[in-house]
Image 1: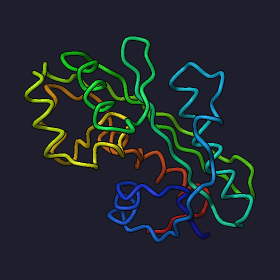
Image 2 (image 1 turned 180 degrees about the vertical axis):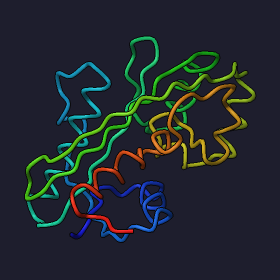
Image 3 (image 1 turned 60 degrees about the vertical axis):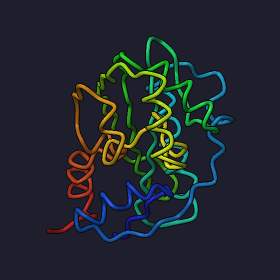
Image 4 (image 1 turned 90 degrees about the horizontal axis):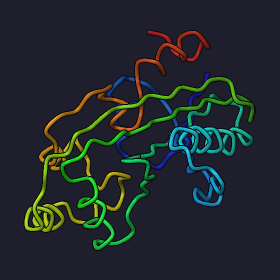
Length: 192
């Protein structure tokens, strides 16, 4: 059974490659903000977007199509990927010294029909950051910070922003791998 990753995330693709999976990549044509109008719950937003991405690509493929999405919530506020450095700085100020939740949803479809879903939540405690530390981090992180819902990538420089992380490492990277592998084996899409 062919596997298609409905995501352009280089981190998700690397996680799959490191696990020895063969797959193709197809960018999903889903307008994220439009697809979640009226949804306020961060877990529901992640689930809906993962399913829409999987199904959008799955309508054009006879493969197992994997969609994924992440949302971040802190104190009841849903955060999005920052579009500018100023937005990234504002987001880091809001997360500084606080715990937030990172929700990662996966969805697999076959022939455009949803076959499996999974949601994992991790709790991350960001250490208190001064304005100087935020600016220094943004200088060093560059445009990479605009590609992450949390304005950080824990697999790189972003790990320095944290004092505690509780949860599945792969979920934090954007792809809860162990539940996915279990599903793929049961669906006949994985042999080892």
